[in-house]
Image (cartoon, rainbow, N blue to C red):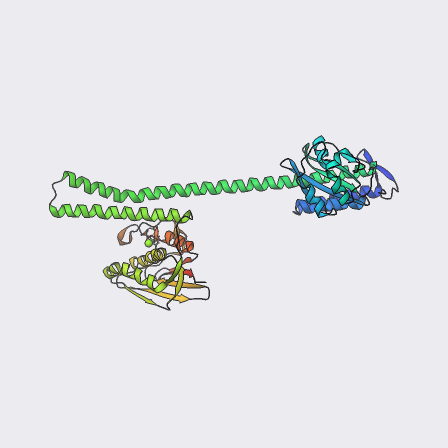
Length: 430
Ligand SMILES: Nc1ncnc2c1ncn2[C@@H]1O[C@H](COP(=O)(O)OP(=O)(O)OP(=O)(O)O)[C@@H](O)[C@H]1O
Ligand SMILES: [Mg+2]
């Protein structure tokens, strides 16, 4: 390995001797590495360019960087070494006889193997050296904050003792590599910190949402429980007529079934949100499920004199029968409950190339645009608590989660004063 045109030798930083050309090259590479680091290049890109630059300066050399991770040396950069060689040394454990790199990490100082054929530290790697034409190898530790974080190695094809210039170049380029490693570590730490902060914020939000949910649930259960307590007290302390007793028992029954339906919905919601809702998807006739849902809301529709119509093509959809019925029933009962007396509720099926759609439209009051975001907040009834529309406020959030669990969607369009239009979209059989 002939040194690079030693036109004039200068001392740089007080250590070693470099040519003017070397000094310019070192400075140029330093600038380019800084530019790469600030432009967001990956560690392996930066290390490759450092290694290639040194190979340019030390003729007939092949260089590599190994990085110390979890106590072993891992591949960092070796653009000119044969891939099988890099693979063989990947995972090398440092030790007193671990070639040039493993020994350099073990000792914390440069290790120069002038002839790997006779160097005792290369005994177990001799076959690799022969296979890949390695005659000499010297390796210097790369340090970050005085800790060894890797090695910078220079390989020669024949036996070779590095001169002062070569050793100084390696020292300079190892320093550049350590800057790149430190930068990478800082970026990773910043990313980890950012991710931890995001996780903390989302845990905090989830916690807040959970306590809001618990507060709303307790509030929701309180009213029927108080009503049960009131009727029970009347039954126990007052001399009620048989009619009054029946009325009180009826009140207890209604309050109990209200509690039961809230508990069922809450359990379903918890299950579907945890991804633990058993969904048995099968090929179904959408019209059959719609007809069943209409039958179930018919008594309520009759009370309100609301006419439910259904039109559109028959469609086979991929869905869980019970859960699809739960979705349609929620939407249909909303449409009926929020319709003025004597109004019409229309159901329409529609097939697109990708999906089967079920549209449910009513001519009710509609939902103001600024309240749309609250539609899927559990227990939020958008102020519809009082009066005849009182439900628990769980229907829509549950319907959307169920539709999504069946790989479908639930979308809502609403215009105040004109009505509301719900669209359930379901996958078609493949
Ligand atoms: N078709 C509709 N027209 C007008 N407002 C609606 C309609 N559907 C839902 N809303 C509004 O959205 C709120 C939430 O609906 P959601 O179905 O989640 O709860 P709910 O019907 O009140 O109770 P639940 O479905 O649990 O019995 C309703 O209280 C109502 O204010
Ligand atoms: Mg509802």
